[in-house]
Length: 166
Length: 403
Image (cartoon, rainbow over all chains, first blue to last red; front, side):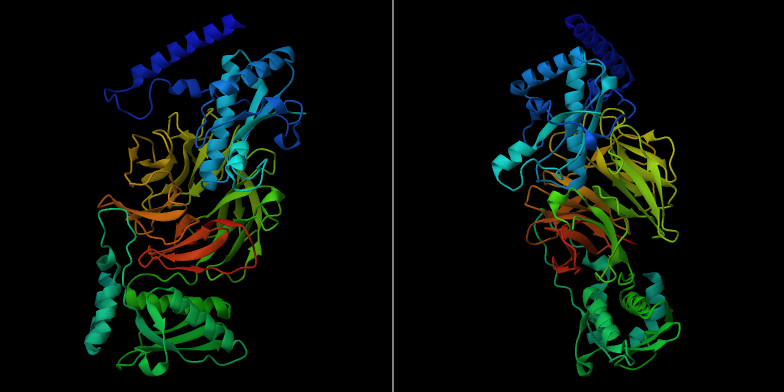
C-alpha cells in the first residue's frame, strides 16, 4: 500500500517534470508544474449516482471550507478509512457526489462541486485506490443536506459524499 | 449607425431641435461613459415621448398594451398622451399580422410604415422593434424570447425543467419533462435550438433541443460533467465545461456532438464559456488564481488573459452582441451585475439591489435579462433599473435571450 503510494508520487514527479519542459520561459504562465496531478482521466461511467447507496459510507463524508476544494487535515482520516474499505472491497464501484452551499452561481457551483468530488477521488487514488472504481458527480447547490441560509446549513452542505453504485 | 444617419438625415432636418437632442442622447456610442472605479453609474438618459393610438378589433386592447409595454421597456421611449408625443404609433390587425405606422408630430414622412407578419402579438413586437431601431439605430428586442431553468416545484424537489417564453414573460411553456436537474439553457444563434445540461441519465450530460422538430439529441456524455454549453456565433461549435480529464476544463465540440478539443489546462475550476460575437475568443470563469474570476482565451486555444474587474468572485460572463462589453455576476457584493468594457479595460457595477445573477444581453447590447432571487428581470445597464419579466413560475434561474 505504502509502496504503491510512493511509486505514484514518483510517477507524478516525473510527469510534472515533463510538463515543465513543455512550458515556455514565462514562469508566471497559467498553471504550474503540478497540473498533471489533477489530470487523471475519469473512468467510463458505471451505475447511476441517483440510485447509489449514500448511507453505508455516510460517516466518510468530507466537508470543505467556503469556495475551497482542499481536503483539510481533519477530514483526511475519513479518506484513509474509505481507501481501506475500497481495498477490502476491490469489486465495489463508488461515486463521489460533490456539493456546494447555496452561495454563488449555478454553473460555478456545479464545477466546484465536481472539483470537490475529484479532489476526493485523487486523494483516494493517492492512497492506492483504483481510479477505475471511482466515479464523480457534482450537484452544485441543488441537493442540500440542510435547507436554509444559516452558517451551519452552509457548513453541512459543502461536502463530498461517497455512494456505493449498484 | 451610418445607415441610420443616411436614411434619416432628411427627416431629422425637418424636426425641431427638441427632438434631435433626445435622439442623439440615445445613440449608444455617446452613452458609454465609464467611471474609473466599479461604482454604480446612473445615466440620465433622455427618452423620446411617444403615444399609441388604440388598436381596433377584439385583440386591440391587448395589442395596444403590448405595444406600449414594449416601447416602455425599450429604454428609448416614454409612453405619453398623444398631445405631448413626438411620435404617434398606430397599428391595424391584418390577416397576415399587423400593419404599423409611426407618424412624427413635426410632420414629414412616417418613421415606420410597414407590415409585420406572424401572429398579431408577435407582429406587434416586431413593429415596436422596427420603431426603436429607426429611432436609435440599434435593434429593439421586443420580439426576442428567453429560455430559463425553473424549479417550480421548489428547491427541495431536486427538479429543474427548461422553459421558454417571450421576453415580456408571455407565452411561457415548459420544454422538458426530465424530472431531473436541468441547467444553463442557451439558444443557438438562429434561435431554433437550445443546448442545456441535465442529470436525467444520472450523470450531467449536454443535450440539444431542436425547437421546430421538438427533437432532442445528446451531444456530450463524457465521463464526469458536461455542462455550460454555448453555441459559437456560426452555430457549428459548442464551448462547454468537461471534467473527463479529471478537472473541469473549457473544451469545444461540434454542435452535433463529437470529440472534444481541450482549450484550458489548469488546476482551476474552468466553466461558463461565452463566445465573442466574431467567434475568435471565449471568455470563461476560472478559480486558477484564488476566487473565481474572468479570463479570455482564443477560441482555438492559447494563453488566457485575466480580466481585472476589480471585484472578487465574478462568474457567468456574457459577451455583448456588439462585442464591446462583457456582463457578469458579482457574488461578493451579495449578487450584483458588472459590465467590463473590452476597449477601456474598465469595469462598473450596473445594478442596484441584491440577489442578481446570470446576466444575458439582449440584442441592443444595453439591456440584460437576469435572475433576481428566483424572478426574471430586465435590467437596463445604463440606468440600473430592473423590471420584472412576469410569469407564473418560481425559482427561475439562468435566463438566456435570443439575439
